[in-house]
Amino acid sequence: MTGQELALRLRQARNAVGLTQAQAARAIGRPAQTLGGWENARSQPDVGALTALMRLYRVNAAAFLGLEAETFTLAEVRMLQRYRALDEHGRRMADLTLEEETRRLREETARAARRAQSARPARAPQAEIEAQNLLAFRVSDQPAAAGTGVYLGPECFHTVYVNAQALPRGAAFGVPVRGDSMEPVYHDGDILVVSGEQPRCGEVGVFTLDGNGYVKKLGEGVLLSLNPAYAPIPMDESIRCNGKVIGVLSPRDVDAE
Image 1: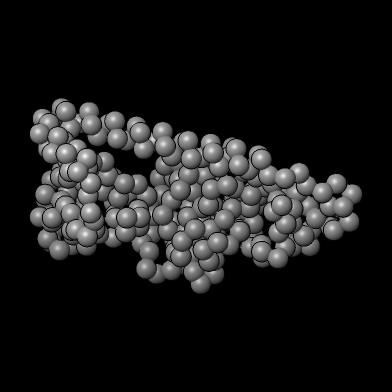
Image 2: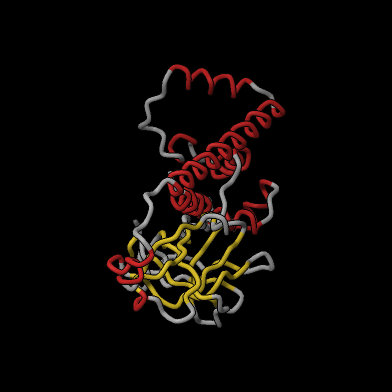
């Protein structure tokens, strides 16, 4: 299940029992802003919070997580039985271990992607590049989400070569788009051209919130999607703007070899 799907199911389950975000958050002892982040896919609940929400919303865990049609191995069934036999402290320790291992796997996957990037074949001689009127341009390895946020770190960039005429003045770096919340203007897979300028209200920029990257339109105290199916994201002091979107690269203008 994707983060966006989980967020949607959390909203639907809460609405089905007639609770507001504030009421649900108070019932499980979490801030309303945190629960709002889960329902907007800016973050995901830990196992303990998700379990508390499913109890509060009176939903079956397997049905809620879409696992009814899954086939479990004997080892997985035994693991579940052992987990259920633990006391509260034991379950908390098991949850922490799972979260740590998930983080480790994510970091190893990111390192493997960087190693693969560094192993790309050497480019043609500089004279050939200049003859083709190509410019070196940095593009983020991680997409900025038009919907769900993902990590956008300064160390995760690679170099592509772009038709010089395709780069608008002030281009600083590129960021791929993931998701559909900025349609019909920006689409999944587009490479956005970003400048170092700060967007004004009503302009589109790339923002970082809780370590996740977003491409959104700057509103009055909120980040807005162009697709009306997505709710605004409230801004706070932790949000950082990485630059203003000033264009989109066409695949035919990019030589990534």
